[in-house]
Image 1 (cartoon, helix red, strand yellow):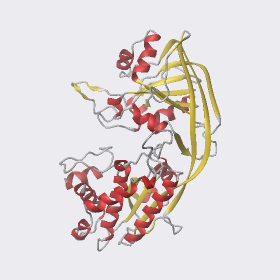
Image 2: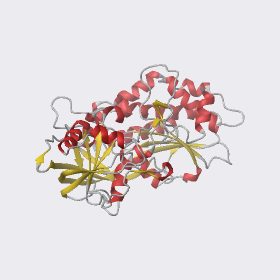
Image 3: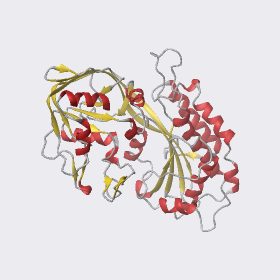
Image 4: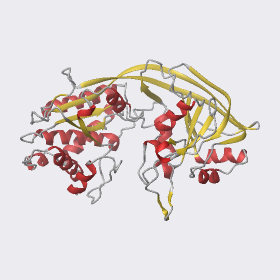
Length: 439
């Protein structure tokens, strides 16, 4: 873990240091595995109740992060003189009923085991009745790639099925590899995010949007989906009460969607293959219909981002910012479980939060400080869709055109020394060149 954090520190120092870089040794000496472990143990202890926003666990988490920033000697990160940015959230606990059928024959569904359905609309009840079902491939509209999965079909008022992730386009010269010219090859673009898929479904006027979950492609099992979405979910409080969102957002296991397709006389494997072609057109499942009834328990929550600032030493550049982020939240606890009810979240993301504190301590030891200001941002509601980060991006406390970079830690390397570093979003910024030089 020490090497991971030291590397991140070196990368940013290379980006924002003076012509005569400060000695790094005092800073690096402050980063210790025992200190990291102690912070991880504290944040992931039962006392913090899984760090769910809007719970007593939030109060303890943000108080801990704030107290640590204060002990380090950092300034409040909010220009109003506090360490907190208020993030208004809407909490929604959905109780769904789903009825999918083909020519009257019902598909057997079990909530949380093979499907999840929620409504992000801030309403006590949402109903979708007898909507036709359309397979829309990856559900992507990407003009820069000449890609449109919705071509020639109006999905307004319909239930759409979408494959997880980006289109995995094979390299025409080597089918064992992905085409680097399409959707960044192995890298995931925003088109592969579930947030995008629900956004485009909302834009197209769909009644329900169901993502077909595959563990290998998604990178996590369905239990992660059901654990994250099966309890209270959060959204940012918006003036329209999220009425612009698609009424029903859901996930379904690949096996269940495959069964549904077979009932409609279709082959999901072939549909997937066809969906990798630019000329793909949506396919309506013959005789298939979907109905959903979702009852919502609603509450409004005042959550918080925690932020601290180390002011830059160069008067000409101290109004430019480099941000380190890590989310403090996790999944909270589930009182319906027998035995251990707390999702402690040691790796995700007590480790990242501890890393944020260690890096802050290291920066505080630099003399002189980096010429640009450093902002340490501990965000809320990452598990609910990156909401704390989204809120800061929409309501920045410092101008985004003066914000040069953000390095995010969603879990540290807990497996030991490594020679490799993975850059998510490779090719998008000049930070790639700096990281390559450091390595």
